[in-house]
Image 1: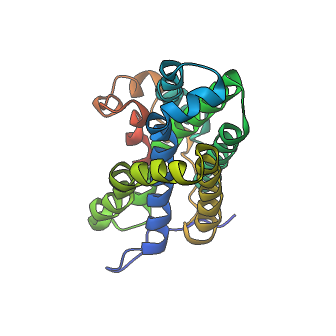
Image 2: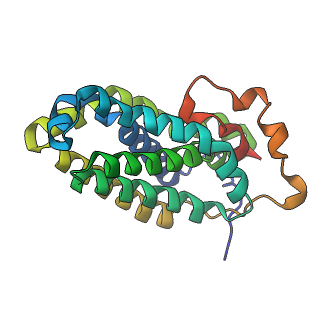
Length: 228
């Protein structure tokens, strides 16, 4: 497998960075979309709106608990296949939510999505940093993380409106399709990078107490690793 070095020159690798930004957009939408669909999802799943709210909580808790150990287990693997795997996990989880009439199955799919989210957030900023020279890292990371802002300001309202127009199941099906499209985009435009060599890895016990591993957002609790 071929790997890439940071791009030289002043131009940012826009296509690759936007692919990563869209991955962030997809992750945030997957995480928070149920919060705007409580009255619609509750009757279909045969539970109260409060229990549907646990679909968001379950995602966040799974993301928090999985981020450090799953990233530790996978950090020696090539980075692009891991990133693609998280997006395929999102696609699978969103498709299950779109099709399931069982609350238990839906909740299980949300836990899977949370694990994928915790793994992805541990990678995105560092992946962007590795795609550019050191002096361009700040701008590259800002481009990728702009996907979070767009998801919160535009994606969630648009997703809720889409669910009003064509149904919440179709909205989740559309989200699954978006994740698959991002997989194709990343495979074509995002360079491949190797995993961490054994001698350069930070031990899990040290990572858990790093200040960078305790940000306020549950689903982004180990993003500092990816820059290594």
